[in-house]
Image (cartoon, rainbow over all chains, first blue to last red; front, side, top):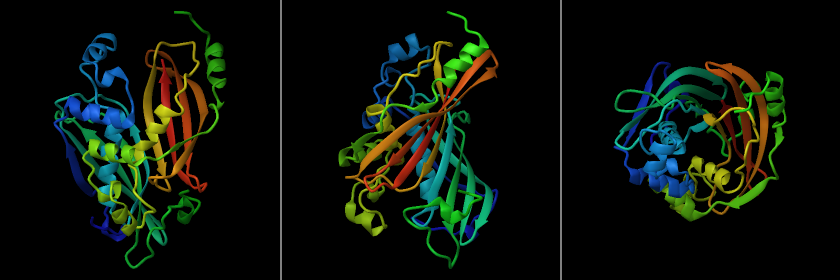
Length: 162
Length: 153
């Protein structure tokens, strides 16, 4: 896993994307089992389309969150700390969709001796529709600076951030 | 469907604010962590190999963060007592991450409704409810804070 420093990051930079799919009902059921979430909209087509009026069984929101967390954690590397992440649920995803998690640096905050990077993130379906837009804040070390402490304590960033 | 005045709807929402039930505890199980990682093709060795996790500085095998939701489904499911509107929609989640969940930990989750307000939506009154769950481990360390925004319409 690559390690990045605060100085390596530029506003406007896109981070490496992460694709999953095409989604199948097996993906959805594996996640439902892992979560022990047995809501029928995730596995019962008749209930999903009939009672709930959905286009199909739908991909679990928490599955999508995990993929976007994976995107951010992979980029932050071992030396960075994905600190905050926020998602909105604006659209559904269904079997057949290939989903692409993406992220873009939108701000940098110098919090000596560390840095905080804000990202816009999202998860696009094949039509380019972003059903789960969000934001993330990642704490990074500076070049020749101390490592981000583990466990992470936001107080190290000063009052302005914590 | 029964009609409620704005004041009645605001009273219903205000009554929600406060702790929800008692804090509850649950163990972080290896099988649960492994199943969750496999379900998203997350093959990072910290999800199943204790030596690899310790080498990276963790106390043990690290759970994917959405395992937090397992505590929701197993321990803290609750019914929001809102008489107005027809459906409750999950609108937004905000996570804050501190100490990871490690296999063998016992996680305690305390849930509270921290805010509830009436807004005007495009099609009528809209209740906005914010639930906060704070997850701590057996050492008293804060692991995560999960804020969920729900909309009642």
